[in-house]
Length: 91
Image 1 (cartoon, rainbow, N blue to C red):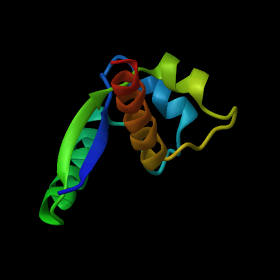
Image 2: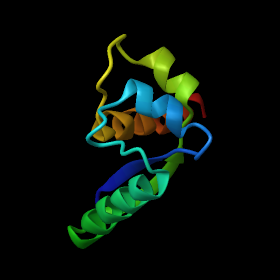
Image 3: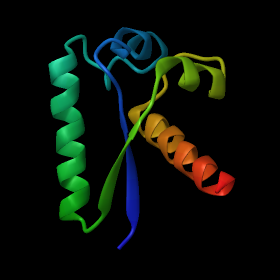
Image 4: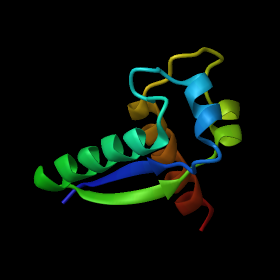
C-alpha cells in the first residue's frame, strides 16, 4: 500500500496559512477546514492509501515555497512529505 502524507496545521497557525494559500481551499472557519481535511483523509483511505499525518508550521512552509500567494492544500501535502523525506535522509 502506498503512503500519503497529510499536512496537519494548528489553529493558531491557520490565519498565516490562509494568507499564503488559496482561499477556496482554506475557508475562513478553521472547523470547516478540518472537516475538509477529514474528508480528504477518508477518501484516501477508501482508495487504499495509508495516511500519515505530518505537523507543519506556517513559517517553515513560507520559507520553502515560491514567493506567491494561492498555494493549494496539495502543495501543503507535498511540503509535509518533503519534511518526512528529509528526516529519513538524516538517519
